[in-house]
Every structure is written in structure tokens, then in C-alpha cells.
Image 1 (cartoon, rainbow over the protein chains, first blue to last red):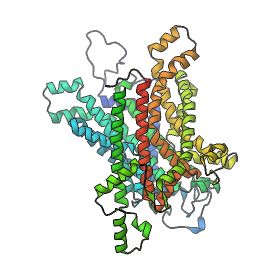
Image 2 (cartoon, rainbow over the protein chains, first blue to last red; image 1 turned 90 degrees about the vertical axis):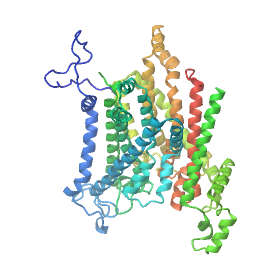
Image 3 (cartoon, rainbow over the protein chains, first blue to last red; image 1 turned 180 degrees about the vertical axis):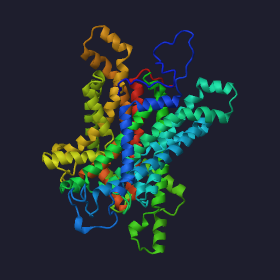
Amino acid sequence: MTKPPVELPPIGAGGFQPLDVAPPEGGEVQVIASGWRLAMREFASNRLAVLGLGTLVFFVLLCFVGPLVHPTNQTLFNPLSVELPPGGGHPLGTDEHGFDELGRIMKGGQAALEVGFLASAIATVVGTLWGAVAGLVGGIIDGIMMRIVDILLSIPFLLIVLVLATKINGTVIEESLLLGFFSWLVPARLVRGEVLTLRTRDFIHAARVMGSGRGRLVYRHLIPNALSVVIVNITFQVADAILALAYLGFLGFGLNYPATSWGDMLGNAQNDISSGYWWLVYPVGACLVIVVLAANLVGDALRDALDVRLRRR
Amino acid sequence: MIGYIIRRVMVAVIITIGIAIITFAILHYLSPSPVYDVLGAKAQPSVVKAWNQSHGFDRPEIAQFISYLGNLLHLNFGYSYKLSQSVSALFKENAGRSAYLSGAALVLSLLIAMPLGILQAVKRNSLSDYTVTTANFVLYSMPSFFLGLILIQIFALDLGIFPPTVSDSITTTFGAITHPLQLFLPIVTLTAINIASFSRYMRSSTLDNLGQDYIRLARAKGLSQRAVLFRHLLRNACLPMITLVGLSVPTLVAGNLLIEVLFNYQGLGLLFFNALGNEDYNILLAYTIFGGILTVLGNLIADVATAAADPRIRFD
């Protein structure tokens, strides 16, 4: 997707020199900005990405601060106000237990976001360590470690997660551990690939020739350069984990009562729409799609911003 | 080429054995012996012990694993004590309907996604390109069951053209094929989800190819746009699709599961879903390993097919 060209704001007193204008002969080499600042500026200039990030922030606020503004009873069944259409004190109506649907969406959103971020954090930490060790050590250990990744990647994710979900208690922590434990494979592959290509790059050789020790090489050169791949992957992992939790919930293996997640709320959707209770299906489904969409947008934009080869200038 | 295929097959065999080890470990951890399913939860300990002994469940794990592996080689996926049928028989009964659902969706999505991707790339940055890209992005972020729900709402509940769920009277693959109205919504749902990822790749692959010299040469020779696109570009732009189709096996397996549950369509996915409720671990693990083998086969076939189709790939 191409973006409209955006004027960069001037930096400091010198002003910004566009790169496609040839510098005057013998001119001074000017540092425009560090790689990270350039990436941040690139990201901020992508309107879709800012929209995605704004949407994520909005949902975090809605789900975690919203219940303070719109307090609702989400623990005790209320048989007197079951399946009320939107209106009155219930902006989005009530569900089959008499819970306020808007409050339910906030509560379910908390779980979805918590599991999304926690599972992605687990997957990222495990995957990065696994991939980095495999890539750095190399040889037979690398071979064994990556074959393990190949094997686990060949087992369909949803199936194995569902099988194990029959035995867990359905708390946020357990669901995150379950999803995280089967999601670290892709980051492991990415990080290993990145480490392998970085190891042979000229600037690493140069740093080594200049006398960098192993520790300095890893912390000062390898990690910052491999980090961009990891960061991009985190956002996609969040989107995937939220979707996976929704699948588990829809199939009836989500969080246990009184906790709920968006997928759990859609578990009965088939009957709800047949009975005309549209407010129990579309608002929560829309939230799910919008949050996953926003996370994917942010991920795409981060990839564009952090990958120098894809950068417009 | 032959050497390459042999090497790839050997890797696939090793990975399959790895999958078997993991599924066996999980099976063993979740349900060491089906004895209580057979004899009831209140069976006497001595009877339980005798049953385990006579059925080999008291042997060391490694011995049990070897006989499990041997059974797999004979396509014996175990026995469902809950349904009193062998898992292979259950699979044989349901596989046709699932294969029809996945196959139809896969073929349809390729037929639509490939021209769509080419069209997007040729008219890149136009309104139609943006519209399709946006639609793809939304579909890509949408759980398949939610798309199915929306389609049920529009086409079944509001317009009343198609039934909201597949009728129980469809019990054979033949029945599924001869009742296209019944299967319309499930197939469309799966197709739409697949198109979202396929056309994205097709678009970028076409864009890569459009910038290459052989296209410029073809244009310079004075060929028409149609000839350039369909005689020269199409074959080259489709190469990544081979890999993509091979890699889409797990998505198809998972998609089948959700769509079959949503539309109540008797297939392997629904069998698996019902086994989840029954804690019927032999079916669960058999389907997981079956999905794993399909994934490995998908990768293997995609690799070999790409190598056969693309002479630039060397085999050493």
C-alpha cells in the first residue's frame, strides 16, 4: 500500500535535507537522525498506522477505564432484565443472564487484551531466546533446536490448543500460557534468520575487527538490529492471540464464568441472531474485528517503518 | 531432482515421527488409559489393573509408543471407546464431506484470487485496488465464524435464499455435492477467508514480476496487455501460490473446524468438536496427528512442485 508523500518537519537549526537531493561536492556529512527516530517519524507519517494505534489506545481506555464511567453488575444473574433491546439504562441491551451488554463488552475486552498482550509477550520472549541461541551457537544444536520448531509448527495450532484447553481452568493466565506456548515458533524462526544474516554482515565484521568483545557484539550490534523484526512480530502476535482466544471462546473453551471474553460472548451467536437478538452479536463482533484490524495495521506500518529497504526515501 | 525429493521426503518422515512423539506424549499425559471409559468410572481397582494389563497399558511408555507408531503406519488411529467405533472408520465416514468443503473453497478461492491479485497489481493505487485491499485487510482480521454469522444473517435470515445451517439429511459426500444450496454459505465463507490471504500474495507477486525485464521485453515486442498478462506474467506470478497453497493446510483444517461447527455440517471438524465435549482423546489426538501429516505433506508437495516448476531453484 503506498502512502501519500509527507513533508518531514525540520530538525534542529540545520533543517532536514531530503536524501534524493545530491549533497554538494565535498559537503559535510550530516546526521539526519538515528535509525529509531527515523522509524518513529516514518510511523507517525502513516495515517492508517496512527489510526490503528489510536484505536488500540481507545479500546484499552474503553475496557479498563470504561467500567468506572459505566458501572454495571457483571456477577449476579438478573432474571428480570433478560435480553432487553438497546435503550434505557442499557445502551447495548442485556444478554440472556440480564448482564448489561456494554459492560460485558468492556469486561470481555479486558480479557481479550490481557490475553493478547500476555500471550504475545510469552511467545516473544521464548521465541527470541530460542532463535537467538540457535542462531548464535549454530552447528548441531541449531539443527536440533530448529527441527523442534519445524515439528511443532507442523501441528495445526488450533487443534492442539483445543485439545489442551479441555484440561485447563480457563483463567487469563492459563489461556495466555497455552496460547503463548504454541505461538513462539514463528518469532524463533524470524530471530534465528535475522541473527544468521546479521552475523555475516560487514558492520559486524568491522566491529569485531575494531576489537568488540562477544558481549558488546551481542548487546550493542546484534540485539538492536534484530529488535525491529521482534517488535513488528509482537503486534501480529497480539492480533493472532486475540483471534485465537475468540476461536476458543466461540467453541466453548474460553474463560470460565464469571470471567468472559469476546469469543465466549459469541458462543451462542447462532441462536442469538436467529432469535433476533442482534445486539448480542454485532457490537462484540465488531469490537473483535476492529481491535484485530488495528493491531494488524500497526504491525504493517511498523514493518514499513523499521525495514530500511522498504522505506520510501 | 531425485536426490532432492529423497532428501525432502526424509526430512518429512523425521518431522512426522516428531509429531507422533508429541501427540503421543500429550495423549499419555491427558489420558494414560481409556480403562474408565470402557469399564465405567467406578470400576474396581483390580479389574482396572487386569484390563490395563490385557490391553498393554501397563507397559513402559516407550513400548507403548512403538506399538502406537506401528499402528499409525497401518493407518490404525486407535479406537473411540465413547462412540464404540474405530477412529479410522469414523474418519473414513467423514473425510469425504470435509474434503469437499475444503477442496471446493480452495479451488474457488484460487480461481477468484489469482485474477483479482493481477487486476489489483495492474491497476495499483486506483480506487478499485484500494477497495479490494481494504476488504482483504478486514476479512483477514475477521474470525471466520463471524463472517459466517454475517452471511447467515443476510442470506439466510433476511433474504431467506439459503438455509442457515446444513440440513441433517446430508449424510453422504454425494448428498453434499448434489445439494449446492445447502453448502453454499459454508463454502462461500471459507472461500472469502482464503481469498483475503491469497490475493494479497498474488498482488505483490504480480507487482514483483511487472517490474522485470521479460515483461518490458514482451511489451517492447508490441504484445497486447492481455498477451503480456496471461501468456507471460501469469505463470511466473503464480509460483509463490504453490507454496502458499501448501502452507494453507493448517488454515484449511482450522477453518473447516469452525465452519463445520457453525453450520452444523457433519465432517471431520464437527467430529473433532464433539470429541472435545466427550473428552474422547483418541479421536482428538488422531485428528491432530492427521492434520500434522497433512501439513507436512502440503509443505513437501509445495516444495517439490515449486522446484519442478521453477528451473531457477537448484537442488544442492
